Length: 106
Image (cartoon, rainbow, N blue to C red; front, side, top):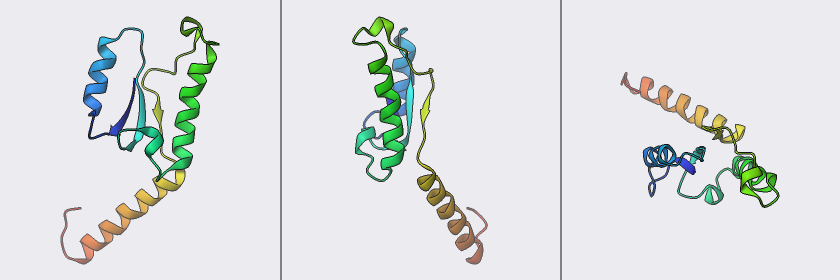
C-alpha cells in the first residue's frame, strides 16, 4: 500500500486501515502532497527516490511476487533536502512575521 500523508482523495488514516486488513502487505508513505507520488512535480528528487524504492520491490522477485523483497513496513519516502529546507525557511519567516506583528501565536 502506498499513500501520501497529504492526499485529499485517499486520507492517510484509510491507508493505515487498509494495511491492517491486508496481512501480506506493507505501508509505504510518501511524505508529500497529492494523490499520486509521480505527480509531485514540486520535488522531482524526492519522487525519484520513492519510485526507485518501490521499483526495487517489483524488480526483486524477477516476476514472482512470492520471492520479492518488500520494503520495511512503515517505510517513508521523504521529501528532498531542498524541499525540507524551503519548508523550514518558510516556517522561520512566518514566525518572524508573527512576532513582528505583535501576535504571539505561530
